[in-house]
Amino acid sequence: MNLFSEIGRYIIFMKYVFKRPERGRVFWSMLTREMNLMGIESLVVVILIALITGAVTTVQTASQLASDSGILPPSLFPMEIVGSVVGSSSILEIAPTITCLVLAGKIGANIASEIGNMRVSEQIDAYEVMGINSVNYLVFPKTIALLLYPFVISIAMFLGIIGGMAACVFGGYATFEDYVTGIQTDFTPFHMAYAFIKTIVFAFLLATIPAFHGYYMKGGALEVGKASTTAFVWTSVAIILLNYILTQMLLS
Image 1 (tube, rainbow, N blue to C red):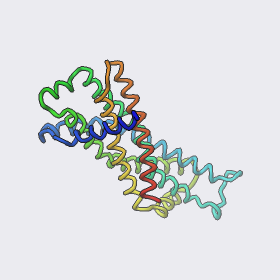
Image 2: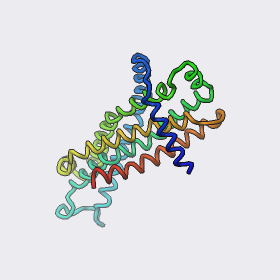
Image 3: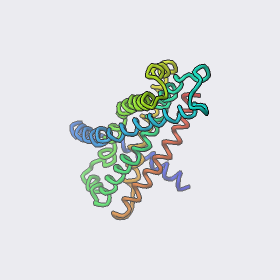
Image 4: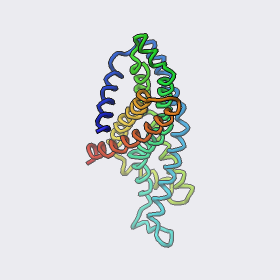
């Protein structure tokens, strides 16, 4: 019952996010700040995740295809399969889903702790006294900034494929030509649209769920850490659940 109560309060919370926007100049100032904090400063993490997971996917795929002698009969298992698997995995799951799950710990916890600290220090109460829609002022710029995440995920897709290619070629699993051929052969344009749709949905959750937990936290400074942890857990659960739902709707 408490879960349904929280869901209802979250829906009401979202109504206030889009209800009364602040002046354009104030909004753009907040938006550029949030884009820098959540986008540019997260690029290093995104780059590392994409490169490493792409390389690991290559090694795992090649090892599964390898025979007991360590050499694949080309007629049975052409090595283009490695490029096909890595390319599809990077576009469908590694870039949009795995990256957002990791960023839920970095960005989500940061949002929850930032707004939670403002609640503890009574800054949110001060906004309300001045007649400012505190939910819109604090959450709306973060939401719009994270909805631009498909650009970041595009970088993750590219670097995942590059990381897989490096591991494939330098590890001696396949030639560069075989790897590229595998990517080109099984590439489906709709998979890009599917990945971007997932990214937009996940980014929305990544901005609003931690903000919700930070905004409605109760207690003192010690509760801020608890709110950050709770926000990370529920954001991850929501991302995984909607990942299945969207996949079932768009790819089945």
